[in-house]
Amino acid sequence: MEQKKLDLNSIIGFVLISGILIWMLYSNAPTKEELQEKAKKEQVENKEKEVKTVTSTIVAAPVADSTETAVKQAALGSFGYSATLPSATDAVTEIKNELLSLKISNKGGYIVEATVLGFEQFEKNSKKAVQLIKDNNASLNITLNTTDNRTLQTKEMFFEPKLTKEGENQVLTMQLKAGPDQFLEYRYVLKPNEYMLDFAIRSQGLEKVVNTSKPLDLEWQLKTFRNEKSISYENRYTELVFEYEDGKDDYLNAQKDSEDDVKDLTYVAFKQHLFTSILLTDTKFATAKVKSFNLVKDEKIDTVYTKNFVAQLPLEFKNGALNYNMNWYYGPSDYKTLNDYKRNLDEIMPLGWGIFGWINRYIFIPVFGFISGLGIGYGISIVLFTILVRLVMSPVTYKSYLSQAKMKVLRPEIAELNEKFKDNPMKKQQETMKLYSKAGVNPMAGCLPALMQMPIFYALFQFFPSMFDLRQKSFLWAEDLSSYDAIYQLPFTIPFYGNHVSLFPILASVAIFFYMRMTTGDQAMSAPPQEGMPDMGKIMKIMIYISPVMMLFFFNNYASGLSLYYFVSNLITIGIMLVIKNYIVKDDKIHAKIQENKTKEKKESKFQKKMREMMEQAEEQKTQQKKK
Image 1 (cartoon, one colour):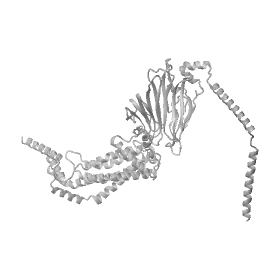
Image 2 (cartoon, helix red, strand yellow):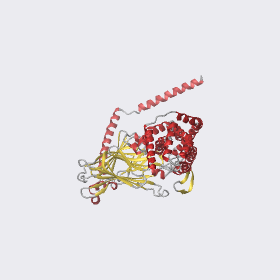
Image 3 (cartoon, one colour):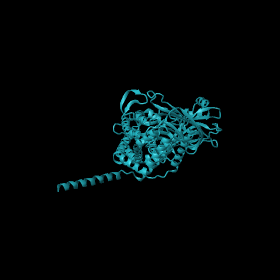
Image 4 (tube, helix red, strand yellow):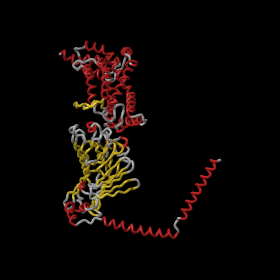
C-alpha cells in the first residue's frame, strides 16, 4: 500500500509541475500588439542587412591603384585584370566525396592535390593516404597567344573560384578573367561516391583578346609517385595508355623513354601499377603528342617517382570560343571499377592481347571474383582458384602423360629400328612412321596438351599483377599479396635477384624441381635421340636445374600472390601425375593395347598416305642415284 501511495504521489507531482510550466508559458506569451511590433522591427533589420551586403560587395570590388594596374597590364595585357582581383593568391579550394579528395589552386586553376580515400601507401604503419597528386608533381597548362602578341601560360596566372552545389553534386568554377565578362573557365563537378568527375573548358568573350585562328596548346603533366613496396615491380606496370580512332588503344613502352603522335585521341591514362589518372574527352583531339620518361635510373636513389608523363593536346576554337566537355578519373586501377564506366577503360588493364585477354576478362576475373566474394580471405581464394584451374586442366595433363607413356613403351622397338637402319635415315624414318601408325600412337600428342596450356599460363601471368583486390591483403607471412613476401632483408643486392629473400618463390621453385624431375625422366625415355639431332634427354635433364633457378630469380620481386599460385599449382600437378601414374595409366596395359592395335588394319589418313608416298618417292630417287 505504501508503494502505491508513493507512486500516486509521484504522478500527482508530475501533473502539478507540468501545469505550472504551462501556466508560466501562457502568462509570459507576448500579446498580439507585441508580436506585430516585433515583426515590423525584424523587417527593418533585414532591409538594413541587404543594404550592407550590397555595399560590402561593391566595396570588395577591385579598385586597384592605377600604377599597379598598368604594371600588370604591361605584363599580362588584358589578363592583367585577373591579377588585380582578391583571388590572386595561392589559396586552394577543396571538393571532396566519400572516395576522393581534390584541392584546386587559384594559381593555374588546376588540381594540386588528389587523394584516393581509404587506401594507404606501402610504408608499414605509416598511415599515409595514397596521393596521386601533391607537392607540385602535376600541372595543367594552356598556352595563350594573345592578339597583342603575348604568349601567356595559364599555370602562372590566377583564377577566380566559385563553389556551388547542384543537388548533391559539388560544382567548382575557376575563371581566368580578362574583364568582368571575359574569361577562360575550368569547371569541375564532383558527384557522390565517384572516382570520376566532370571537367569542362570553355571561354567567353575572348575573341578580341586571344588569337582564335589556330588551336591552343593544352599540356597535362604528371610525375607518378611510388605507392607500392617494390619500386621495380611498380615501375614495370606504370605506363601511358591511350585510346584513338574510334576505340583503338595503345601504350608507350614502360621500360624506356618514348613518345608518339596520336590522331583522334579520346582518352589518355597515366597508369600506375594499382592506381591511375585518366583524362577523357567527348570531343576528339585531332592531333596529340604523348610522352613517357622513366625516372628510376637507380632503385637505391630514385625512390620517390617512377615516371614522368606528358600529354600535349590541341584545343580548337568553334565560332571564336572553346567548348570542351571532358572527365577526370583519379582512382584504383581496378578492372570492375573501370569497366563499369562503359568508356573502354578496361583496356588500360594489362590483361594480355587476343585470347589471353579474353580468358582473363570472361573467365578468370569473374571466377576469382566469385570465390573471393565468399569472404574466406584472398590467400585461401588463390588456393581454391588454383585447385579449380588445375582440375579443369587435368584432362589435358592426362592426355600429355598418356602420350609419354605410349612413347616410353615403344622406345625399345624404335631403338631396334634406329640400329637396323642406321645407315639409311630415310628408311629409318619411314619404318618409324609405320610403327607409330600400327601402334596407334601420335608422336605429336604430347606436344599438343602443352601448347593448349600456354594460353592459360600466360593469362594467369597477366592476371595476378592486374588484381587490385590483392593490394595490401595478407596471407601467412606475406603482408601484401600484390608485392613480394620478404622473409629476410639482405645487407647487399644480388643482380637480377634483389636485396631480399622471398619465400613463396623458393617454395614454387622447389615444387617445379620435383615436378620436372618426375616428368622429365619419362619424357627422356619416350623420345630416343635422332641421328644428327641434339640429345633432348640430356637437355631436359639440364632444364630440371635451370628452370627452378630462373623462377627463383624471376619471381623474387613479383607479387607473392602469383608465386603462391605457382607453388600450389605445381603441388596439385604433382599429385595428379602420381594418381595417373599409379592408378590410371599402367605400362603393361598400354603395351597390351599397342600390341592389339598392331594386329588391326588401320586405314591411312590422307595426310599419312601423302607422307608415306613422299618418303617412298624420296627413297626411290636415292636408289636410282646410287645405281647411276
